[in-house]
Structures are given as C-alpha cells and as structure tokens.
Image 1 (cartoon, each protein chain N blue to C red):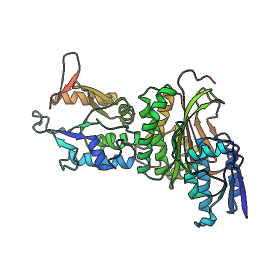
Image 2 (image 1 turned 180 degrees about the vertical axis):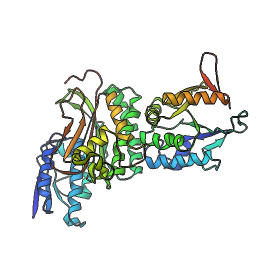
Image 3 (image 1 turned 90 degrees about the horizontal axis):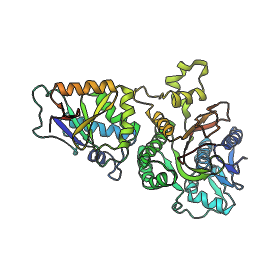
Length: 305
Length: 164
C-alpha cells in the first residue's frame, strides 16, 4: 500500500508544517510513500531541501532496495519544473525517489538567482566546496543587489559554513544546502538572499540530550534543545570552544538585520528581526526528522514591513 | 625566537590545494597540529620556519612567539578560529602575532578570543601592533612583551615588535 503526502502548492517555510503533518501521518505505518508535487506552483530553497530530507527519512524506514524508494510525482507546470531542475533538486532527488513525470535533463545552474544549487553536505570536504563556490558566485549579488558591504561576503560565507557544519557534526547523516537570491514581494518588497539547510538526521534534542537534558529536567524536549543551541550557545561537546557556530551566525544576522529559524522535531525557534512577524518559539508542531535551518538576509536600507 | 607560519601554505598541505578557506573543525584541527609541530621545532609544516637569527634579547628566550601570516587565506569561520587561534593560545602558552589579517578574518577571530578571555596581536603592514580579543588579556600581553623587550613603544603611542 502506498500513502500519499501532498506537497503544498506554495512550498516554503510557512507551509512546511502542513507538509510535515502529512508526512508524519503517512509515515507512521512504514508503508511506501508517494510525495505528490504535481500541482506545485512555487517552492523556496527551504521547501526543496526539506522535501529531500523527507525522501531520505522515508527511504530509511523501508529497505535499501530501489523498489522501496518513495515515489515523487514531479510538478507539471513547465516553469516550476524548469526551476526545480535549475535549482539542482532533481539531481539529488534521483537518488532518493522513484520520480514520475517528465523531468528536463539536468543542467548547470546558469540562472544568476541560484547562488548555490541544492548541494549535498556529508563531510567537511563538502563544506569547503560550498564555501569556495559561494564566494565566487555571491559577492557581486550581495554587494550590488543587496547593498551589503563587500566585506560582508566573508561573513556570509562564515554563516553558510557554520550552518552546513551542523549537518556534518550533529546530524549523523548527510543533508543538503541551497542558496538563492530573490525578490520577496510578499513580505518585504525587496530582495533577499536565503540559505536553506536540511537533514533528516537525529535532530537537536537527540544530539544534546546526553549533556543537556538533566539541566532542563521536565522542560527537556525539542524546544528546550533548540533554545539551548541557538540562544545559550551550548553544544553536545564538552570542549569550551564549542557552540561558536550558531552564536557567530546570530552576530552576523544582527548586524545585517537578518533572520534565522531552525526547526527540529516538533519545535521551531527563530531570531526574529523587526521586519518579520514570526514567533520566536513554537512547540507541538508535527514531528519531522532532523533539522531544517532557514537564514534570510534582506536588501539593506529600510526594512519596515 | 619568532616562528614564522605561512597559514596559506599550511592550509594547502592540510586540505586540497583547491581551497583557500579556513573552514570546518577537522580542517582547523589539522592546521593547528601542523602549527604546533612547527612551534615545537619539529618542522612539521612546510609553510613554517624560524626567523633565523631572530633570537630575542636575554629574558625573551622563554617566550614563544609565532608570527602567523594570513595573506592568501580566503575566509575563516568561527569553528576554525576557535580550533586554531583559541586552542593554540589555550593549550600552549605562546604569543600569536597575526599578519595579513583582513576585516573578515578579524570578525571571526575576535569574538572567539574574547569569549575565552584570550588575546593575540595583529601586526599591521607598517609594523605597528594592534590587540585582538579580551581587553584585560590584551593589556597583560602587551605589558609582558614590553617587559621582556620583545616589543617597544613607539613615538605616538603605538607598539611594534623589536625582534625581526
């Protein structure tokens, strides 16, 4: 029997919980899953890497054989299909899903808005490659289109590096990263650069449990783990220098009026800038494996909502 | 003795020569170990070498000074800043004089050092020294260098190393 998981037509961080709910419901009896994206109209980098994480998690539940890979129906809208291809989604999805529908032949991301196509992150070497690539591609866009000081490019690369390292050091499995610049009409009516990172690994609660759960007592859970990591800068390692990564990302985002949101398990935490109406902490969300990180850096200038 | 470390050269020996960025903890660990070997006089890093004849005046002999040149290094992230600079200072008492430092490098290294209560020195192109990290530790470091005659106050109130 195959269970259906509908991919939201507008698939981004706002609709992710709806997707996670459908995924959790369909995945509970270990049947083969069909991710239905045929009606997709738009997906953010967060949606794309999140869908790959779901495919990874769904595959892990069954046997490793190709026949037990989850199914994915590709978007039917040619423009959407073209973007998903350009963004590198299908190149990664081909290993995780049995894909149904016409998928254009994969080609390199030539579109300037795709600063970094969906890229797998499994080891430190991958982080080197990501950082090297982003510095070549992003500096012009960060400076000319977002109005960031050219010096901020290095900070951007640092933030990206640390976000990716969370996968390598904490997830216990591989994940994906994607970076894109686009005009964010809905919220800001200005350009933004978005970093999206997702994995289907053990998540923050599991990673921090051995060192932090006693300290939190009854409060311990996904929300407390996220709070410990992002707000208090704690790490699962006892080395006093650990926990620098997320703290560094926060400093960078404060300086450039950016946003970070991390979803793990059943909770989501965010450092919310003035221009956004997100809530700092949400708990009791539909469970989803691993961790999903969203970083948004807006065009500089007035960021009144 | 001032030990000269070419960070770019050490990095290229430590990871693929394709990359110029100091990112990730594993990279930081390998780079730091090479620098530690160089400081210990084991010659583990090709990009490392002692400044011949730069032995300091009497009283400076016990102080290990490593001049680390960041020229050619792209980005350094917080994890690498901690793994290399902070751990070199924490685990092995030495004075680190960083040169070829960009604003971006500084942004990564400074908060890491401050968080640990540590300090290093930056040597500007004109030879003057600037401090990086926790203020208290930085003041102690400069005082100690002056007391050991490894650094001296210049006219105008700036400091510079007295050793080559």
